[in-house]
Image 1 (spheres, rainbow, N blue to C red):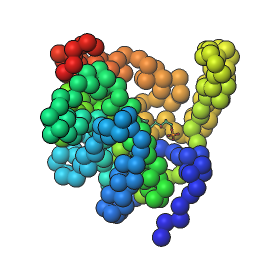
Image 2: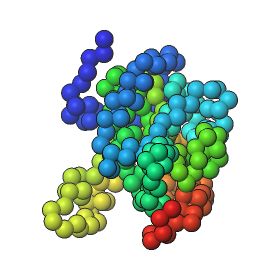
Image 3: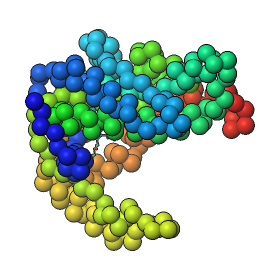
Length: 261
Ligand SMILES: Cc1cc2nc3c(=O)[nH]c(=O)nc-3n(C[C@H](O)[C@H](O)[C@H](O)COP(=O)(O)O)c2cc1C
């Protein structure tokens, strides 16, 4: 039987796991974690999310190719695609003789928020069940093609988070976080002093470079500065955000804040 950590320890000990044992997680555990994640709160209890458990080998390879994933993802025994999904609620409205008049921008924003809350509940449930988990760059790359492969109708639904799951075959050290003073504001938000950000970056660089963490990124880099060069730079712009922004137009198509769709 799995020994369950208390919730605060579980949150404190969360790490992204990028190396997995070959054995597959128990199907019943995955199902149970998804059922538990359904207990997550959602706006007006719309529950605008769904999960595609990607099991066929050829399909899995095609999705990962479209998403331009790091090599470790192919070794993850289980892949779950969490989607924003309004399909059920649109159907419910029709069954009730109504039209779902929530406009598309709201469906997108509310859907991303609610599906993300669902995702994190799922991740915590998986971790509490003794499994290692990694979110994989939300499918910014190849969004439309990934949606087609998984039969997700963009505009009504959207692939959001790919979650890789397996038994952890590594025990990574904690990654840097900003000090709470840079995150928590009372009454009015402010930017931190530049020195706070600089200190965070310098201490984080030492930590990250000593841990050898950068090797897992798959990029030919040796410093945290270079890592951010990739994350902020032209590669990110051209490979992820620009195609993503274009694909997102499908979600907003025919939408205006005043015209229900
Ligand atoms: C939405 C999302 C997408 C992510 N995508 C990737 C990814 O594509 N590849 C990866 O190695 N890690 C990915 N991560 C994991 C982050 O890199 C990781 O959470 C962060 O570096 C902090 O490390 P920690 O989770 O171990 O504390 C993702 C995390 C989130 C929340």
